[in-house]
Image 1: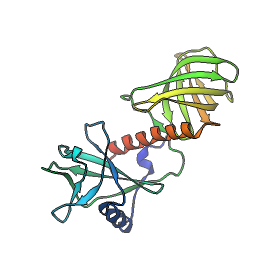
Image 2: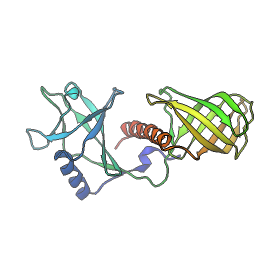
Image 3: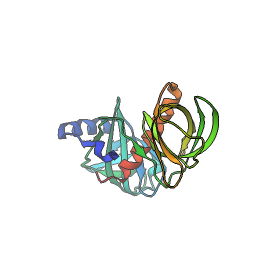
Image 4: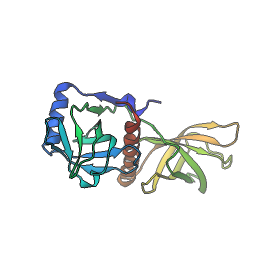
Length: 225
């Protein structure tokens, strides 16, 4: 399985300069995550007093310091860069140069759920019966998920339709419909089930996308860009 880092490519010097101009002009905002802090803050970037200094307009970041990961969206494109955040009296700041990386969606990336993130899953139904079978989430993408079911019964089968409810981290729960594409029976009991999404609502798809966005940010923050 590819990691998020495999989908991040540094932009050219010309693209980097263009994105930086848009950033400083206030045409796009950024989301920032600071080391050791699970919260994500939105901010704009402004020119500072010195040549390479950039202010972060969100005053909630004034007391922030340390390594920061920044996420910037322009149209349908997503970019990341890292910089050290310095405390200030009125504004926190970062320093240029900034090396900007673009998220390349060659395929639907699958994201492993971090062990420290709260998560839960429940198999609600198959095409034959209603259920309430507990499970745990292993991976998620925009096109499907992988779950671990500890129970041997009911016995799930390939190509069976299934409905699953899951919740990841701070996001609201989501119910998805899918079809079982592969099953691996485990010697220790239970099985892992790979599910491809089918016939889901726009609302459900949007909630899945939000979970994937959170995971992209999580892994980009931990990557060495």
